[in-house]
Length: 527
Image (cartoon, rainbow, N blue to C red; front, side):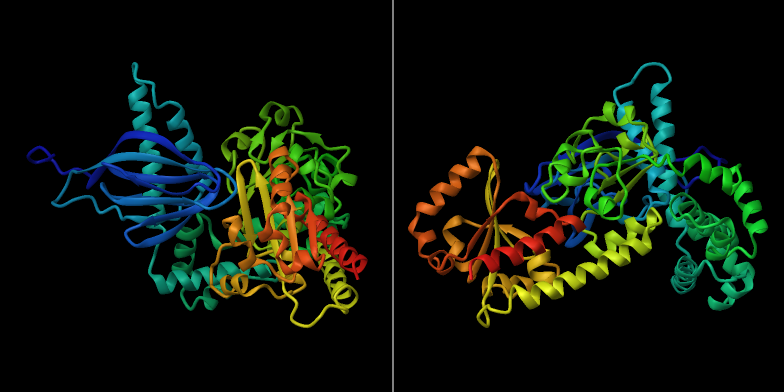
């Protein structure tokens, strides 16, 4: 395509949308090969997996976008126990000025804000079949907005060294927002002029350094107003405002109400629908208004869930109508699961499922202003771990090994765990060599399906096995106990097999504490 004589277009290229689809992959379904005939923009929708292209591997998770040229061989790998899906938008780049092809780069893109991107993609997907009247033009405009977000993210990439220096000051602000910080101090930290620093800061964050600092302070102040019980004067000091008057004036300018009115209106009305991480909230003394039945049935949580409404059968099968009826202030989910649906009901926070436990717990605690409570729980838990090691394990023979399995009937699987928080991370128990060999590999999977005939390779001196409660799992368990390969195991012959419930799969604070208690009890009872 060429421009008319004498015409010089302001754009060097345009991007024409052709198609949009959702690629969905079932839990633990492995690798799926894909190849698209046109340029492909891949937008992670929900779940967490891996995307491979051109010899490179990328984390495919909520918040990530990718662009690849036509004919690229792609591999989607869903290794998790939850569904994985992504939007795929196919498009044509057309060059308008100069020679050569579009310079849009392939690979991973960091889109800010991603919530805006996912909303625009969702609207385009829902209108994909509309072809009458002006609808195709509306679809074109939606796609241009999506491309604009991509190109804008590229424009936010200044010189690497300067960019890194500014990013370091951003991290400093996040950690030290309560200090008396000035533009001059921050620019000096980055070793650049105030003007240059402010310009790069704006490109990276969309706001000035001082606006960013005030936003961090106010966000923390809102958390404290709703959860801490501290006075206005104390909150002003904690969050870096020079006096209560300055704090109140800044707060009202940004929130349209004073801090006192904000706290009075909201303190007793924080309504959270928790689609994951229920045990984290309960351990912090926060009871959500809704959660999935699967979480409510957790044995270690059940004593604290009687006042929580069921909002679906599981973490990935929500009852959206019921959630809306509860009128939540916020919805907590994981890996972007149903993020678009929840965001239409209330502000939604998505936390990656594979976030390390203590990091995740502290993040949730700080989010609701319960940082002190989290640190107190962690101290108590570490003391519980130390006591368990002292009392329950003192009589064990040296070099005894421990293994952990999960037996399920639907779908039928037998899994060995390479990472089991209580056994391997906290109590630091040794594993059989076949397990330990994998544990030594960087980035290893936390569990793996194995043929049941290979159980002897992975079985330790002490064997912990979760058996699901469905009929198929129970039948498989009875069959396994009758097989010679089972009866010949050292742990079986010495009565060191401990059958567990699915409560041992849970990794929330209350479940971990309960697992520790049960571990100590089980070992002590069989001495």
